[in-house]
Length: 64
Image 1 (cartoon, one colour):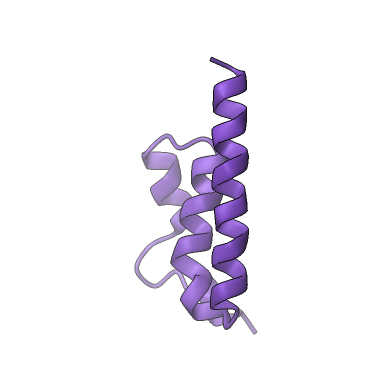
Image 2 (spheres, helix red, strand yellow):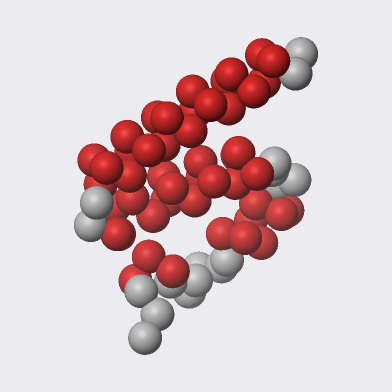
């Protein structure tokens, strides 16, 4: 059985991110935000998202 947070009735998040030409950080951030309310680990998932934003900023600054 497919978990609820993988529901693609309104279209695939993978297709959306591909259409928007998002990089891997941006894709992961969008995915985490969209799914956090559905998975049942809202605070934990958003804390991980905050960490990922910090990592993305660090990598971005390093590569400028």
